[in-house]
Length: 169
Image (cartoon, rainbow, N blue to C red; front, side):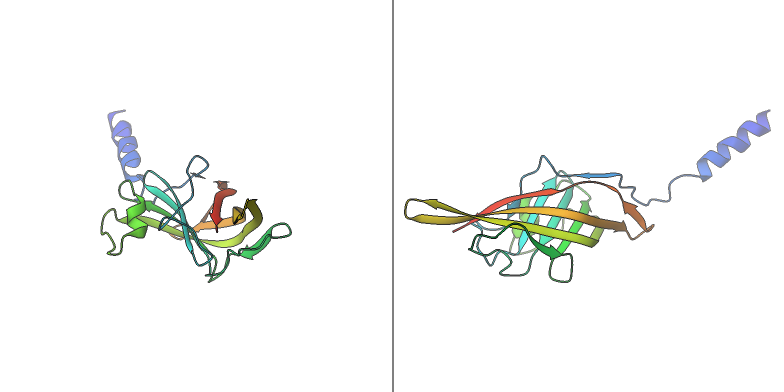
């Protein structure tokens, strides 16, 4: 009996996780969309959401946001110019990580997963306030496919459909 207990203990210890990160859920619903600078322009290309040590980063081509009302949602497929990246850091991350002129070295990126498929959907609404006109851009994600490169596991529980809303003048 003693040998059986030792054998079971050895098996339990030898079946430990190999260190790969297991990502079960990605949820940024309670996080506001952020960007560098004080205002968004049609040339703004980097948007991100942060929750503690995780970030969801959206990079758009310059000029994707247009100062013109759209007729419904305009679809931008995930591609080399429309990139969605999920990162896990070694510690909590702040806006400075993405916006500082001199890049910070901490926290370190532990895991980076780039979306392999899906679309970014943008609806632009014209807002007229007296003589001022602005444009509200609602950004949504659809059919996003994130695949963990360390084990080719698809992350299926994605709660990231509504990315956020930004306004340009």
